[in-house]
Length: 185
Image (cartoon, rainbow, N blue to C red; front, side, top):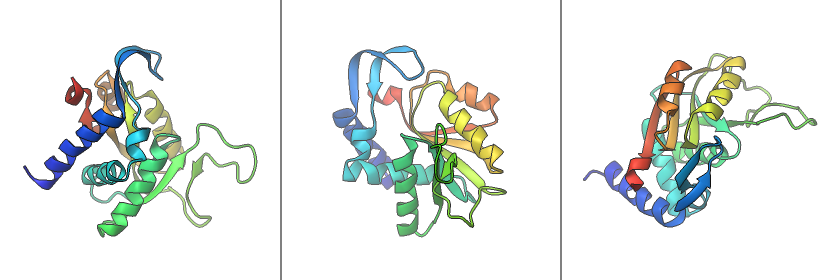
């Protein structure tokens, strides 16, 4: 087993212990499920955060300038990836997309960029913690495209395998996942 396979196996253990439950749940998509993943406890675990960042970075296409995604789930992921990318000498900058502008200050939907930065002409990979139907990340990718970024890849920590891959493909986005629901069946 190579390092990436060991890291992935360890991340599965941490998610199973900290972020996975069985029961009767209604998901953000409105769908019902007997499996529930709340990856925030794993994100807030030092080992879990590091493993997520390393495994996400391994899936980022060569030449990507920025990683980002929709608040709230993608905010820590983007920050972890930026930090670990520096440590591993494969730097990638990060940002996040607000669900709606704050209504004060710069009133920006895309946050994390300095005043002299923009996504215009930049290659961007979108990040997501848990992907079900793909609807939220498609909206965020469209906002990035409106800001001038080129987006063709979504990288998720966990794909629930409930239709996101096809929906993303229709939106011109390829899905790359670290884990899938099958890892917890």
